[in-house]
Length: 273
Image 1 (cartoon, rainbow, N blue to C red):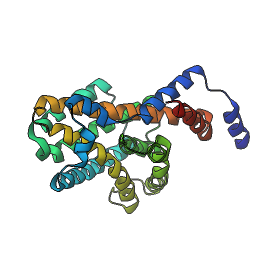
Image 2: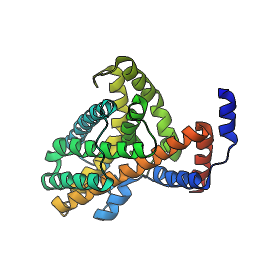
Image 3: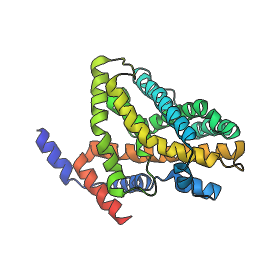
């Protein structure tokens, strides 16, 4: 019976609405360069400046990124046990903008405080998007997929598409997501310090740190200041909201048509871009 259902998924045509949604997902997921947005904002090549940050700044970013994701994971696991309060994308952007204003005013010194706040605000927005696309966030795999978005949004303009495209990155994370979800299911409430969870967070942090460096680079310009810092954080949140929307559209369509069918259609559409 299950084999027959899978065969039916492979043969049914996507509705026009679902095909348009998948096209939207491809646009969001295959061109998710935050650096391009920030470069237009500050008039400088943010991606290159991000790579050239001094070692102390890079270490501060790495530490702040890891701490932010640890806190985000706690929120994601808590979300599984408690229905999160409904919000709006505009509210989340307003909150992120306010935290970005503080970060812009105080620079790198504020990052250990500002980044965890921004990351949790983004996670709540991502979770809201996930629910709107039919995700059950009491499922550990769905909750961890919200955290996974921070890795999916960590692509740079210079990346090789064959290695950093949406399905390539998702494939690299698949084992860690599955193992972490199984671990949470078996243990219930679990510490984020468990080795399986650490492995998952390390993989996410390695990519999330790329865009955090770009954000810090953009906010480092003297002309940016508090007002510019708010604008940078607004772009930061909007970037991950777009990635989240694309990610959870793909997951929704996979539940309807099957993973293989959607990946094949996605690849076909991506080749046109």
